[in-house]
Amino acid sequence: MELAIKYFTIFGGLEEKIDTSIPLKELIKITILNKYDYFRKEINYLIGGYSVDYAILTGIALGDRKTTTAFKRAHVSFDEGMKCAESLIEKGIIEIESSQYFILNKRNENKTAKRFYFTSPFVRFWFGFISPIYKGIKEGNFEEFNTRFDNHINEFSKFIFEELSLIFLQNYFIEDGIKLIGKFWNNEVEIDIVAKTSSNKLIVANCKDTNNKIKKNELSKLISNCDALDVSADILVLFSKNGFSNELKSMKNENLKLFTPKHLKLLVNKKNVN
Image 1: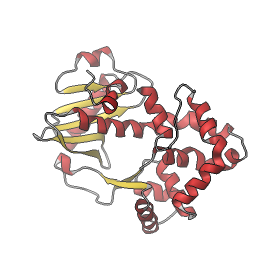
Image 2: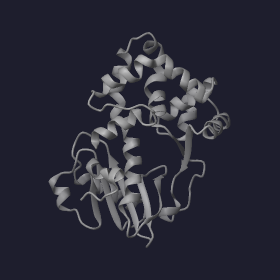
Image 3: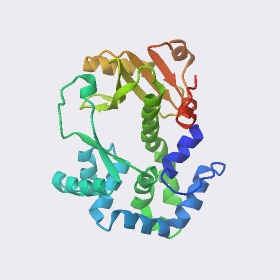
Image 4: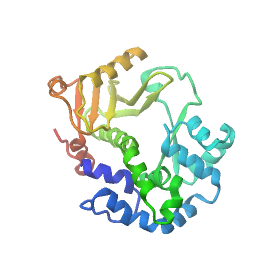
């Protein structure tokens, strides 16, 4: 499942059969880099030729997805940026989300603090790794791409891991189903997933897409963030790409749930993986 997530981060949304037995970078070269001209035409057809749109999409793909960050990277004003973003939303290329203050029963401190996200993992990958350095790729020189990919793919893949984890929770809690779910952030605190069940239980979750096992300190950070917001979570959840320390696993109970990529098989077979 971990392998499937890694490949989905890049190829999700492509209408092509993906062979996961081929090493990832080699498959990228075969499927995308060697077909740069074809995909460039497809992207141009999808988005149009307005260069500011390309700059904004690159800003979203490479940054924290906040509106202000994306527009700053694109060197456009907020008003011009939002006008372009509205057009991209109408085309179905991106969506916009707000911090879920409501779920935590908090007042929205900054109603303009919104984030964008791509509807297609592949299009996000294109604007994160291909479009900004297209000249070398177009000429068949992939050295800069390889360096960029090696340096940023782990950080880049965290968003997809979060999105799949969010969908997983919606399918995992069946008896007391999820009625509200989203993400929370303000100027000081960020929680990857916040949710309310039908019985009004509050769930908070963080996702760690790292090469190391998660230790108890990550649980402490999640609790500390709740304390900073003055909220009391009924269920704490941690998702880890590479598992948990023995100390943390020994603490697992009905109020602390620990999940790894193998649990996300639920999204494929709709069966609970314990």
